[in-house]
Length: 540
Image 1 (cartoon, rainbow, N blue to C red):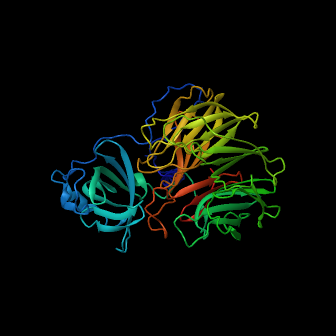
Image 2: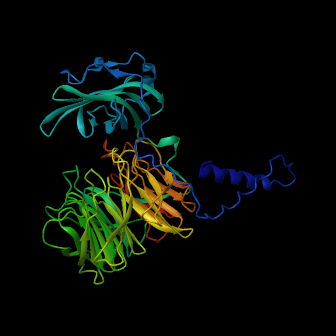
Image 3: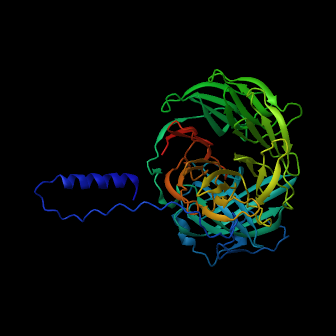
């Protein structure tokens, strides 16, 4: 029952109870559910399903032209839809944003995004202008673009709309006018899934502030100030950089300063320690700002200095700063700094993971906990290091994925202790990426013990663990709050759908919606949405 309905139900019962002298025809109140027993640490290991699960062909249609044939790909007559329920397509809206799960006939995955504007103007497919957009009683979508000197076509033909907001059908890819691959698809419209309301479980939006610096991606809150970083990305009119808000009154954040640097427009993460603000820069490594005046950051230096360095994420633990770099090839690397003098980080070591996959792994994020560093190595998996001696990190073990499935990734995580076991909450990025719960007590043998996933067409992003609550920024699925007191059975207790198709600036990108999150302990949850900016909620 929705939260508002529960309150209404309780109010009605209260009124009935006040009716003195009335005959009581109401049913007796149900006793409250017994409290859940604390988790005792037992579990049954699960089989890793990977992010993308092959569910077989999505629709009884086909593409009729053989591979390698020169044709006009943007021609719906090449699809055999004779076995389809085309009448069901009449229920589709003539606009919307769809995320598409594609299954090539050879059995491998792919994905795409489509946006058809409500005003009928030209839409996009993976950011490229549509050459065909027919959604009035049908579903025919196509685009043509040039990539690395090759002219490419991608076209979709709807077959069935089995339920509201869901379309199945066939697709074809062409290269330089010749058929290269085809298969079936399932497209989900990015309205709120599962007939959800905007919010549930008592989450309330307290304030909202737009970001003009670019695509906002992360936030850190310190001394009643929120530091929001943004990247240039596709918004060429915005430089990327930092926006500072005074959040002394979270219901009314006050914009205090905006900062950008010429030629350095990709700032992806932020963290603080005392009077220092650290920002991850794609070209300058770690930028160090003096925030002795929290509203007025002053750039001091970059670390480690010297050559160009791409730093993507940061994590501070005591007097250690961990900076993760996706490059150089083949593995990316993690840098450890001594920040006992916060404004003057000193490099202690930089290290790479051993090669664990034939694919090119990329270090992405990290989480420090009890002398161990848990590094998300994207395709290579979740890798555990002993960093008790920060000058000599040692690789202890890893949780790896099926390397034949390049859509299974490790992107972000959080670690805590439950029933005397060390438990990691880990998630990937891109289509189907979801929450995994891992027992990392013994890094040499890491089992999967729990999972949480919403629509297969959406992706999880960042997460914050606070006690037995896990707060997740889940892109199109918005803010999700889980009770993880029993880590084997993560239980959603609240949500807020931040994504709206009508938001100005929304694109067809899979990585749209709630992206960054912090729960600093001031009674509020700070979420960054790629289009809406900084959103402040109450903490549960």
